[in-house]
Structures are given as C-alpha cells and as structure tokens.
Amino acid sequence: MVKHAVVIAGGGPTGMMLAAELALAQVDVVIVERHATPDPDRSRAGGLHARTIEVLDLRGVADRFLEEGKAMQIQGFGRIPLDISDFPSRHNYGLALPQIQTERLLGTWVQELGVPTTREREVTGFTQDDTGVDVVLSDGTSIQADYLVGCDGGRSVIRKAAGIEFAGWDPSTSWLMADVEMVEKPQFGLRPGGGIGPAEGGDRIRVVLTERQVEHTSEPSLQDVSEALIATDGTDYGVHSLSWSSRFTDNTRQAASYREGRILLAGDAAHAHPPLGGQGLNTGVQDAVNLGWKLAQVVKKTSSQSLLDTYHDERHPVGARVLQSTMAQVALTSPGERHHALRNTMTELLSMDEPRQSIAAMMSGLDIHYDLGPGHPLLGRRMPDLDLVTADGPLRVFTLLHDAKPVLLNLGEPGSFDITPWGDRVQLVDATYTGQWELPVLGAVTAPIAALIRPDGYAAWVGDGTDTGLRDALTTWFGTP
Ligand SMILES: Cc1cc2nc3c(=O)[nH]c(=O)nc-3n(C[C@H](O)[C@H](O)[C@H](O)COP(=O)(O)OP(=O)(O)OC[C@H]3O[C@@H](n4cnc5c(N)ncnc54)[C@H](O)[C@@H]3O)c2cc1C
Image (tube, rainbow, N blue to C red; front, side, top):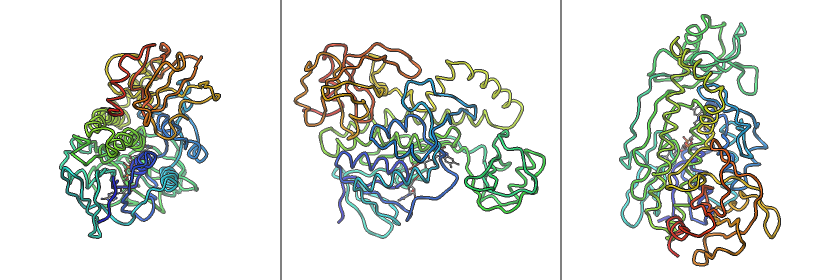
C-alpha cells in the first residue's frame, strides 16, 4: 500500500500552501486533486490582502506574486474603499491578481519543493484509528497516512465523512455573474447589490447583480441577465451574446471543529461565506500557514497531538469573524432604502481614521491576535518585518523565516540566552534594531528585548530583559527538549 505522512485532499490555494509548508519542514506529503489542471473558473478571487502577501514574503516567494499582480489599494468593506497605505507593513496595500494566476504560482512553488500531486482522482472516504488513516481514492486504491487534511472546498467530502457539523445560515441572496455584449453602453460602476464594468481582457461587459430567486438549478441564462438588469437599471441595454455565466450566494457556514482525530480541515472546507471583501482564499492560505508547522512537528513527534488543538483554537475565531464581516457586508450592499441609509452611515464612519484602521486591519488580516494570555502587545500578534543589524550585516526579520523554522530573536545583550536543548529546532539570532516599534491599529509599542517567533510569524513569547517564561513557551510550542 502507498504510504505518506500527510495526505492533502484538494490542490486549491489552501491545499497547495499547506503542502509547501509541510515540504519546507521535510514532511512526506501528497496532494490528491480531482482536476487535471487548476480550475479556470473566472468568477473567483481577484487578489491577495496584506497579511497574505506578508506570509508569502515570510517564505521568500512574495516577489513572484508581486511581479504578476498589480499592487493597489483594493481593500474595501461592503465596497466602501479602505486605504491602508498608512499601516506599518512593507505590504500596506492589496494585490490585484486573479485566482488562476495565484494557483499557478503556488503550483510552481509546490513542484519546486518536490511535492507529488495525484491528479484526476478524488478522495472518496477514509477510516481512522489510533495508528493512522486509510484514505480511499476514487480509483479504488488507498493511501496509508498519519494525517488527512481536507482542503477540498465548501462541499468537502472529508468534512462530511468526518461527521463534522457545518453550522450557519442558509442563503438569503443569489448573485449572477455574466460576460455579455450590449447594444447600448451602460454606465459602468456599482449598483445596489452589484455592479457593471469591463470584463477581463476584452471588450465584453461583466455584469454582477442580485437575483430575485435564491434557488437555481442551472447557470444564469441570457434571460436571467436581462431580468436582473431591468430590475436594477430599468433596461437590459439590448444585452446579447452571453459567453460565460456563474452564480454565488451568501450561504454562510463554519465547521464546528477543525479537527476530528487524525482529520483536519482548512480553507473553504472549514468556512464558507459570500465573497464580499475578498477573504476566502486569504483566510484559507493563512489557515494553512497556522497548521503546517504544527502538523509537521506532530508528525515528527517533537510535539504531542494536543498542539493540533491550538490550530482550531486559533483559526476558528478568525473564521467566525470573517463570517460575521461578510454577513454585515451583504446587509450593507443589499438594495433598498434602509440598506442605503446604513451604507451612508458606515461610509461616514469609515472616513474617520480610527474606525477605518480597525476595519481595514481586520479585512487585511493585519490585526490577527491569537490569545496567548496577558503580556506585551506583541504577544500572539504578527512580528513586524524589522530591518535588523546582525554580526553578518543587515537582515530583515522575514528572511529569518524563509525555511519556516522558529526564531528566538535577541535584541539585547548578545549571548544572553542559552536554548541549547532546543538548538535542533529553534534558531537563536542576536541582532540590534534601532527603529520604532509600531503595530497595526495599536500604533507605537514598547520595544521588546527579545521575541520568540513561530514559523507562521506570530510572537509566542516576548522578553523584557529576563528569560521568565521562555522555557515554558519553547516547550509549549516546540516540544520538550
Ligand atoms: C465569485 C467569487 C469571488 C471570490 N473572490 C475572492 C477574493 O477576491 N478574495 C478571496 O480571498 N477569496 C475570494 N473568493 C473565495 C475563494 O475563491 C475561495 O475561498 C478559495 O478558492 C478557497 O480555496 P480552497 O483551496 O480552500 O478551496 P477550493 O479553491 O475550492 O479548492 C478545493 C480543491 O479541492 C478539489 N477537490 C474537491 N473535492 C475533492 C476530493 N474529494 N478529492 C480531491 N480533490 C478535491 C477541487 O477540485 C479544488 O481544486 C471568491 C469566491 C467566489 C465564488
């Protein structure tokens, strides 16, 4: 029987990011993907948010994405634009980049890292016990693994087979999307519930509009597009020549648990919500980066299985917040006078600095705070990409994390820490930093003397000149020596 330490069901953005993280940690991983090539669906993610770009920068691959995309202020809440250029990040912007390109770039990276992908086969089920998981494929074969991760999208077979509840809210609204031509040129721009603009790479027109009915059994027809246009604009502009159409709804659900024994869920398999604010892919990629190093340590037995529970504990609240924010954005963008009034009020509110920074930091993922207890404001938050000076010369913090290995960064007296017992898994770096310490939304914070940085770039311990709590933090996050 074929054996791998980890099987990832689904080679979308989440599955590929997780595969990369595991490969960097030298874990034997395979992706099983239903399709022969990345899904060319034009309707999906239009870009990456700041924290996702930072995460790619942590691994030294952000430039590949920046070269193909367009860096710009794409952030918005219910289509109310939010400028984040004043945020203390190298990447204080979003990146306009179609999902198909994001997937291609992730695919190339995963290939370079030597991860095998079994294509044109589906995971159809599994059985698990204390020793491992037997993963069953659609061709009748199976793979023996230590862990199976369902990155298989909103209709996740893995989630269903694990019996994990997908609780939430049924759809209240359906949107149609279509590429068409029109006899009369409409006014391009947003409408209540949607918008009309140029389609990608051509002179066709892209229409995104709400529909009267929520339930549908087929893709939108030209007649459906005409009716939706008449409902919003009073005319269908002589719409004709439909070349592509699709739909999405505001179905909003979250897996009650991200782990069931040796089965884990990440990305859309764990949370489904409408695309307003563009957070699905971004959240999935960041789930993967939270899970990857933890799963690697458990597979290598440097940490116990309980470390995997911190994946649910940390990422479930982040997902729940995304669900809440997308529901609020649906309310803001719905047609009707009352929604319009709500939107005007929010627009006014978001023109003020404090609310803008708070909501924009949530939407960009820069405000994520894992609850690691009381302490310095940096604890549980993203480590900024400081320009350090080391004995070997200047160095960015993110460069230290390219191999996804944890770092104890000592900014105090060189040589003041001894972490020899963890020397095989934690890097100790003596450096100086003379600049300001600034965190998104919080602003300036007291300069820490040292920080233990997890492979996902979050601070697991912050030192004030002593090593109080450091051994506990090293043991909690990186295992007993
Ligand atoms: C209209 C629209 C616009 C969007 N815009 C944005 C945006 O701007 N920003 C953003 O962040 N997100 C956006 N999203 C959401 C984004 O597309 C998803 O969140 C993202 O694709 C989730 O990635 P994933 O890898 O978790 O799942 P998926 O992309 O769904 O990938 C799952 C993969 O698993 C495979 N698979 C499924 N079942 C099996 C099986 N049993 N065995 C093997 N393989 C299987 C599938 O073929 C697929 O390749 C948008 C979505 C829509 C519909």
